[in-house]
Length: 322
Image 1: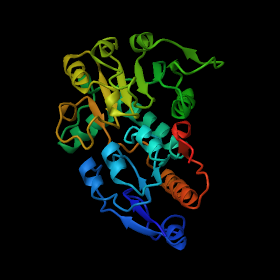
Image 2: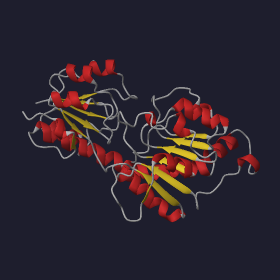
Image 3: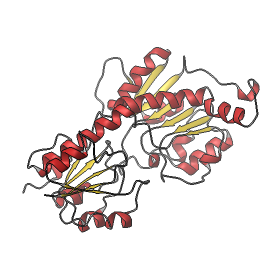
């Protein structure tokens, strides 16, 4: 019998494909209260005696991992691992698992939705009408995605699905991904060229030491004044103060952001701007994706606790064999 920590708020303790499978295998569930992302100190109070954890973006940094002396597996609902210290996890022989592909379609759909919301000024019009307005022309006029140049920074599974969805809009797509080899029909360019020539820039890359702050003040200044920035990847890829300056000063037309450096952000410069569309890190969440991610995370926990190799394991090359 093992204790399994559940901080993923959409986990169903009595679900036939989730909680019931864990309890049927003889495990105890420690279900944390539903809330937003926890701090390291809060996680320290939850991990004692835990053998497995099903989580979203809660931090498993070095102090948390060292305190979790019985931990054998972290099942991350989603694909990002920037909240987990992979080297410490490997040293402590903790398997880290993700759910790749389960939320690809949802994230790609949301990316297109954000592009259109920014281009067609959907959020601004909605707010105006709710405030008693009905402005349709002049500065309230939107523009069109058709015929635009769209730059995709990162061309993994999500980036490819975004490009596929864009095919019906008659756009020209540029791609920047240093890990990408030759792909027929894909026009690869350097990042600075992509930023300087795109009408819409969409980010689809992980947060690592080399990508943190990738869109800094210099690179944001390369964007066209009429351009739109879309981010459904990670907030810390962008210098948010420099982005706010660009949006306030006319250096950028609009931004549509599903992710922010601090989540939840509270009141920020970006949230006060009318030319910013914000959603609360929900691009990867849909009813089908939530079910599939939760099921896969449950599968991986059962695999590790049962002595089997989990399907979603990442960073296996870092793990020292027992």
